[in-house]
Image 1 (cartoon, rainbow, N blue to C red):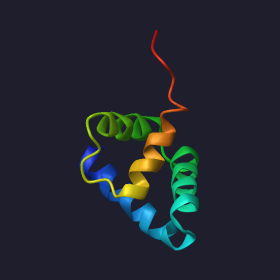
Image 2 (cartoon, rainbow, N blue to C red; image 1 turned 60 degrees about the vertical axis):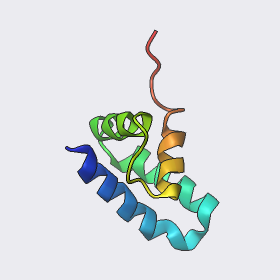
Image 3 (cartoon, rainbow, N blue to C red; image 1 turned 45 degrees about the vertical axis):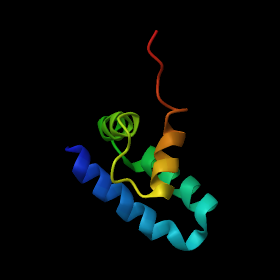
Length: 75
């Protein structure tokens, strides 16, 4: 799936949780991505984030950044 499509989808998720307030919305978006996105989708959105995260809404940008904690490290 293309990064542009994933950015669109992630931003839609962010809009869904916007009523919760910023901090809770960040947590809710991150939880949704962890639970419902395929690992390949998460890997792609993390690569996009690492490249600057163009197009990600601020709440979604923070949520994707929090996914880095879950990402396996390469050694």
